[in-house]
Image (cartoon, rainbow, N blue to C red; front, side):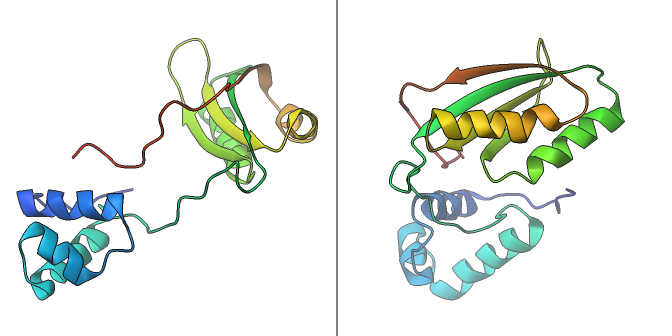
Length: 157
């Protein structure tokens, strides 16, 4: 994605922190927090949306509360690391709702995934029916999370 070049001011960074902490804040509440009136605050937010700095708005859902308590971190090694194989794998995981995060990596493995599921049986089904069906997968190493000690969607800006 190509980002429009805009220089973030101290006020812009304060606005971004406020929105990351509570995306449901009213424009007036954000403006009050950062020391602006509502109109210039809204203009700055719209400019950051247009430039791609603000990519989306969403609700953070507790995965345990919706019956998906298991997080699995999966390291994938492909048989070959050619662009076509890397792209094919990335396209496959992009279509799977269980995959919450996927990263192309350097080092021993080619991809690192974070997958959520209801239980061990659901993970086994994901592994058998999806992950092992992708052509070119050389090895799969799974690590189960015992508990989350930190999670943040707030960037340190």
